[in-house]
Amino acid sequence: MSNTIFFRVGTADRISLSAFVDSLYKFLGILRDLDSALSENKRGSMEWEVTSLRKESPAIVGVTPTLKRLNTRDFGEAVEAQFINNTRSLNSKGERNEYMPDSALMKLKAIAARTKRLGPMSVFVGKNGDEAEELVNIDQATLKRVKELTDVKFTGYGSIKGNLDSISVHLKDEFRVWDSLSGRPVRCSFARSMDPQVRDYLRQAVVVSGILQSNSAGLPIAMDVQGLDLASVTDAPTIEGISGLVDDFTDGKPLKEFIEEISDE
Image (tube, rainbow, N blue to C red; front, side, top):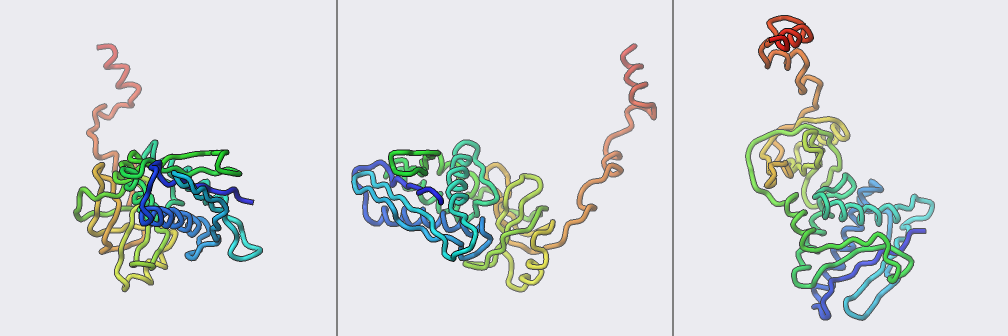
């Protein structure tokens, strides 16, 4: 059975009801988004029940996952681990893995933005609120890291190559491509007319072109898609193609012989 995951809502002695409710709603949203990504089920596989509630300040709410349907896989523990591990990775390295979708990242950003007024928040698991295992903070440092990933700094025409996955049509038509150069996911918005093509290319290597948005480090984060093609080996430079980029500095001699000659000079 999965452990209870606890969410401490800031450190302030008093908190407005709207801020408290919204923070909890974003917390629940992250759990649901991770569940959907892990279970590959848009509606998710778990329900989250309130099993612990500390009424003193700061408030600490504990929720425990239960299966929506019997005889299905329990993703509760995996969801909790991904929440904590991704938040820790964002805090330390500014990175998240493929199981944390953009929707969850934006909800985490919203929670972190509230910490300027409410104080640092935290997430942890354990059998009760006194046994804080794997505790991770959500604070202004988290906000800075997430903004580095999500805030647009540059816009222009470009292309990316990577694997197409995670089609979403909930709010608007989007898919993700894991950019082969940066190793990061890029959110790609596409026209409804491209829907059959996008679904045909799911889980395949593609080349996507269009209006590309990049963050302050120049890494792509989003694209308005104008072109989509399957990638092929010809998209990568060959040995033959690379060999012509540098002049023949050995005058046709074997490298070993050339090095021996210049070492005697």
